[in-house]
Image (cartoon, rainbow, N blue to C red; front, side, top):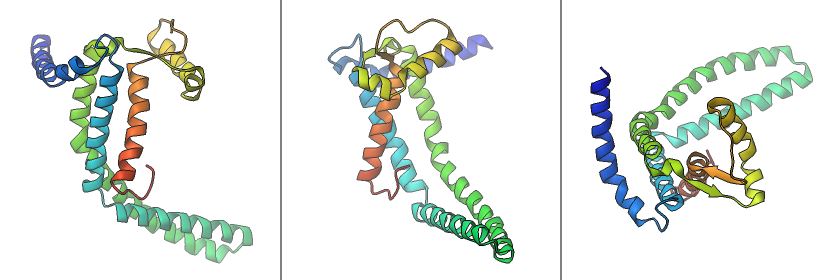
Length: 196
């Protein structure tokens, strides 16, 4: 069984190396490929944003969120006034709305079905390539704003070891920072009405 897994993962890794090693070769610093991680973050953000754009009915999601906010506001008003009759009516309306929210939540899972495997494969490649050795030194304010000490603490707790480079971050945190920024830019560019 382990031989089959090794053979499959080796074959997949060979394919991924064929796809991504040229990208590593273009990096001005291939031994510390921060630019490659930025480009991969852009690719992954593009895939997930386009999948969200075309697989999720954004108008339906926005409408449901708007109705939910309005209902919450009306319920707070009824509670402030002490209007039990109105509150009971609104709670019945809330039960109906929860059914709609479940349908909308299922709608939002569609892109995950398309993007999950490619993203897992990209992470697998990044973890096994030279990218896993990436260390990026942040300016002190960025180091604290990204909560890097907290992430270092979590890493030490889960995996042992110590963060030995002051103001340094690894490939995963750099990837997360890049992906967050890229996703926001792409969402604006593709005309999403909300931030997330």
